[in-house]
Amino acid sequence: MHSRGASGAPVCATMGLKAALPKYEIYFYNTVLCLAMFWAASWIFEVSSSSTNRKTFKTSVRPGFYYFGRKMDTADFEWMMWFSTFREHILFALSGHVLFAKICSMLAPQYRSLVYLVYGLLAVWTSMGWTYVTLILSHCILLYSISLVKIRWLCFVTGLCTLAMFRCEPFVSWQGGFVEGDFELRHVLFYGGCGFTIMRCMSFALENCERKDGNYNILELLKYNFYLPFFYFGPIMTFDKFYVQANKSDLTRKEWELWNISLQALIHLGVIIVVGVLFHFMYILTIPTDMKLLKHLSDWALVGLAYFNLVYDWVKAAIMFGVINTVSRLDHLDPPKPPKCITLLYVFAETHFDRGINEWLCKYVYDHLGGKHQNVVEELVATLCTFGVTILWLGPCEVVLVWAFFNCFGLNFELWTAMFFSMEPFASFETAMSEATSRRIRAVFNTFNFWCIVLYNILSLNSLDFAKLVAKRLLLKGFPITTIIVMFVTYCLIQMIKERERRQALIDDPDPLPPAPPPNATASPTGAAAPTATATAPAAAAAAAAQPVVDPSKEKAE
Image (cartoon, rainbow, N blue to C red; front, top):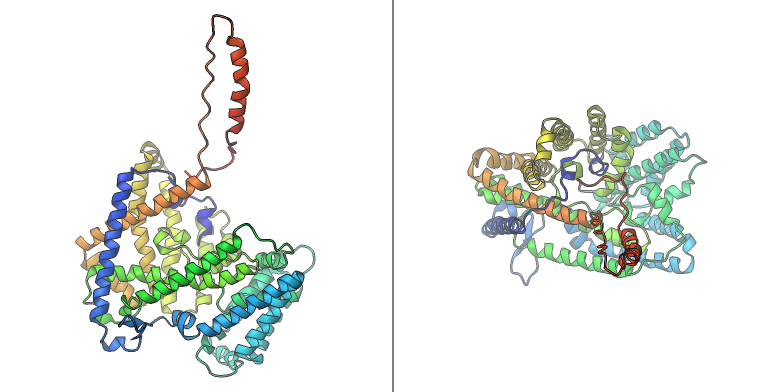
């Protein structure tokens, strides 16, 4: 949950943000980090090259680009679906959306949201059949009817019950019968379309409860839900934002906006190619499925494998959402940003892999129940309810339950730790030490926090056995040599993250300039002191006026 850190609560990551370290120290951390990354990657490359012919690799390691002469890791169905197997179908559907949306925005911009609805309905009808469209419309009508009562808890309970119908039998099989045909993407599109529909309808219903005068039209709900780029795969944009942006009459763009959109599209294309190339040399997705092989790997290979799996999952989310967001930005929308990279995370308060879902949960659950996020009991209730909804969204199972428990504990433990160390005598100790020393001490604690985040999240990405093996090697079997070395490298990574945050903080919130020195009024024997002082006064006033006005109520990052 990102909201607590942004709301001014005592999160460790927001303290001492502008504390600087000597340049040679930063260079040293950067060098150690780069060497460690290359060293871990070399181990994974060696294992990938020597294990190509293993039986467990035959199903997921298949022939790739012919000019490389190497096989490719195809274990991730979602990535292969997007950028290999069904890329022509996805490109065709999104290109048609862009074409019709552009024509409408040129000829009749006031009807562009209606064109989004018609095109989205036709695309869903073509791909999944009219019975599936009927199922989606029934859920929309149900939640719209409940929203007219304007009882918030009733809308929430109805939405959660509807979502639970897709997680348990016999409701899943019954609703699955509404899909026509039998094709490979049927399962993915069914759950994606239905799941995101329920979340969007809940957002609409909750926003309708907040509206004071009247109700939103059901047509606005259908426009919101059947917007094709977001329909099957997300991300989720809350209804209040979509309603304002989709009905905006002024379609003028900022300077260089189209150039930036084109540049982002080219960057996404470049990253897709780079990931495809790396899959020929590093089988980071297939290796964790072979427990016999994992037990014989070196500590460096195992730790690097866990880290690179999380980095890859972020890259996948950033690219998939990035492609969709590029289309939506062409439609003059401002979609949720890509998730924050695991390489830039060391607190649970900012950990998420889907910023759209994160913003939805923060707006309707976490912030609504947690208040200012400074009370232990309120925070515990807010996090428990938030992860309860998340479990229902992901589908209850052992791995999801364990993942939710540890992440919920980590989020609350951060608050408890921050409140504990803000008390005396710890607050006085930190005030007495220099900012650089405080930053180093905080980085030590953040190092352990970082690996908690890594271990907790590879549960959901890989398996419970893989997470256990990594934790055992890192903390028990590899102690003390592997533990100390890995923690030191992680400490270097944390310092590099803090340095990046420091520079960004100086850009976002620059320190005020020092006051101008008093003018030198040197008396002359001819009595010219008074005119000099008089002439200098306007200049001093102008200099003072040029200083930025600092709002005393504004909290500094420190």
